[in-house]
Amino acid sequence: MSEVTVNLNSLLEIRQAGLKALQNALGPVGMIKFIQQYENGVGDYTKEKYNHPDISLEEIDILLRPNKNR
Image 1 (cartoon, rainbow, N blue to C red):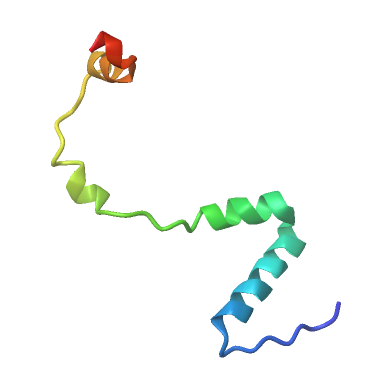
Image 2 (image 1 turned 60 degrees about the vertical axis):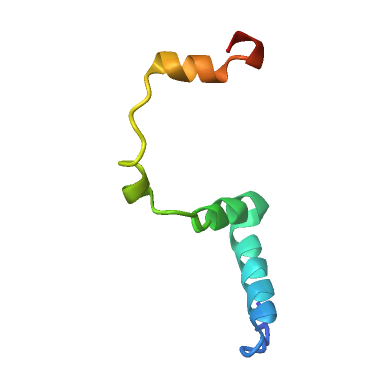
């Protein structure tokens, strides 16, 4: 296996080399699954979960129905 030279001052080159290494090691599907583990979320779930009242299954069912039934 040949060594790849990457400009460590270029974030673009580092990202490209990293993705290529992941694809070579894991294949395309494995690479995507690996990357999905590190997807950044938004907000603060721990705080937000206490700001919303519990919702019943019946209420969820109503919300999922077409608009004509509301």
